[in-house]
Amino acid sequence: MHFLLYLCGLIVWSELIDSKSGDGRKRLACIKEECNFIYSSYMNISIVVPLFNEAESLPKLFEWINRVMNEHKFTYEVIFVNDGSTDESWQVIRDLQTDHNEVHGICFRRNYGKSAALYCGFKMAEGDVVITMDADLQDSPDEIPELYRMIMEDGYDLVSGWKQKRFDNKLTKNLPSKLFNATARKVTGIELHDMNCGLKAYKKEVIKNIEVFSEMHRYIPYLAKNAGFTKIGEKVVQHRKREFGTSKFGLNRFVNGYLDLMTLWFLNKFGKQPMHFFGLVGSVMFILGFIAICVVGGMKLYALSHGIQAMLVGTNPYFHLSILMMILGCMLFLAGFLGELIIRNSQSRNDYLIKEEF
Image 1 (cartoon, one colour):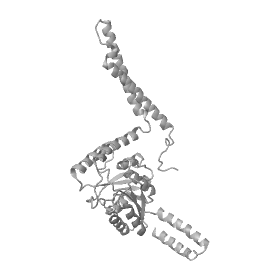
Image 2 (cartoon, helix red, strand yellow; image 1 turned 60 degrees about the vertical axis):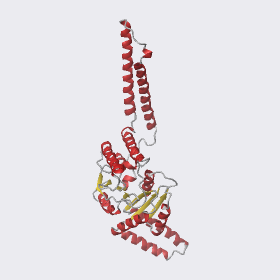
Image 3 (cartoon, helix red, strand yellow; image 1 turned 30 degrees about the vertical axis):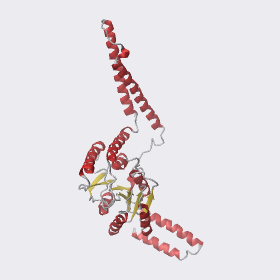
């Protein structure tokens, strides 16, 4: 890798001698493009850092990352994604980029959320291994070399951090986090203790074949599993106290996390075949409603044949409940039918991820 970069440097230097001529300048521009391509092709690590109002922590974070990368002789890039910060975060990123070519930045016009930041960061990332981490200095860059080794040598598709010892408030954050992760393990079948940990490592192939949308960044391991990347590991990582700013965690994130989990589970199970859910539930409700109507009508006929006084069928509440069940059953069945029609006409209905072919 270093030899190739050195060779590119020699070629560029030789062309500088002839750069005064028009042909020399054109050749020099072409060589620069080729060298950039070679450099990006052999990029070891891309670090994606989504952030919101973290101006104070950014210089220290990059200094720490830069030191670790240089100690292990990694080629790397750091992609800061400014998610609509209202402080000086973007100016700090621009200043860092002025002094360090490894720094890249994306700035949103407004706050779109962490999933949007990761989505754009993943699109830009070119490293063989992609690391995600938070900008609040609670994730330690010292963990990166071991995460890189687990991906490249142990063959993991994804490695998630596990902050076994946390310094957050036990009642407002630690306890909800444990409940959330216990539910996520049951629903997804992935044995991770901290699925929402911001510090993760991915093969480049993984992040280029999943789509992080809405607030689904909490469930990237589940998205990866659904895409066929099943070798998912876990590593105990350090958790540090926040040095600057305040936490963005709130009760709404905890509640939304459960709703998003149910959404992902449903889409994964019935997203391609909605009739299997809506058709089944609708058919069951229609049949139960029909049986209930038959029972109500039968009881009325029995009462009339034996001279027993009985209420009118139209005033019987069970009759109306039966009709309602049949109507709902028909509506659910039609919803499944419409879902199948929409999927049949979808341009992505035959999009499949192929691992290898001959």
